[in-house]
Length: 359
Image (cartoon, rainbow, N blue to C red; front, top):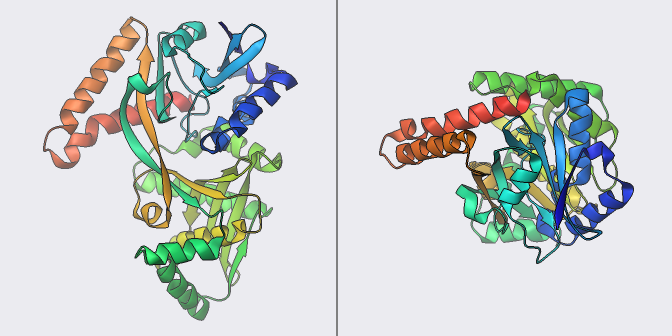
């Protein structure tokens, strides 16, 4: 076996088809972030300076696995980070691949991962923590999903119905639009989301030029099996909430969500999720992936989940030693009863990784 390192734009049609075939064999891999088209879109958005590369494991003349990454001088990280919500080695079932061999082939000392799908044999031993990614399965239709949520004692959908009626009485008719082409909706999303990042002292990922170019490209070049779209909710003539979601063949991935703060009392963002779930019953999509993050609305809407892990894999080097030391400090702090201060090393690591990804 050998490993080819190629630019996404240089992938042949045969290799793109093979990658897509491997991805289609497992619903867990249906995430649009694991598609060859994601790596290609990221490279286009980042331009000539892009360092996105794909490691292709080859046995004879047969492609076994694909892993897209962003390659630096000493380290690699997920392609499209921090915009990428999932990572995985898209591989032929039963393939035995060594993660350190991939690192060496990429020409770096260390590969960091943040949302690696749990259960990947090559990376399982290198995980340093895990979190749940919440998923809504609606393959049997919205009515069946709603009944099951209510039977489970979850009131979020009932609360949505009450708030929808209240919004209609006080703010005007509630109107849902899927794949809204209005440029004003996109501009509102970017403005609201950037404002939210600043208000919560988070890195504004939309301030990097390539991220907005990526979003526009995904919307403008949407196809049946990959792309992104704007979903909107209006109260009368007023834009109340905007979601930008990316999709694969069967999965819609909840990605960027924002709303007008002046109508927050009606929970327009959650109402929009409810409308999207209803709309999905008329489409090929059967899963709404809410992504990693422990938020109440995700827990209440979800009826399934997928564990993802964070960690790193490296070869003996200063870069690997430094990451190991950072994780040891993080683990020690999180083991102490220091309240929110226990999480400061982890937050610092994530902030630094976001900065690295946006460069």
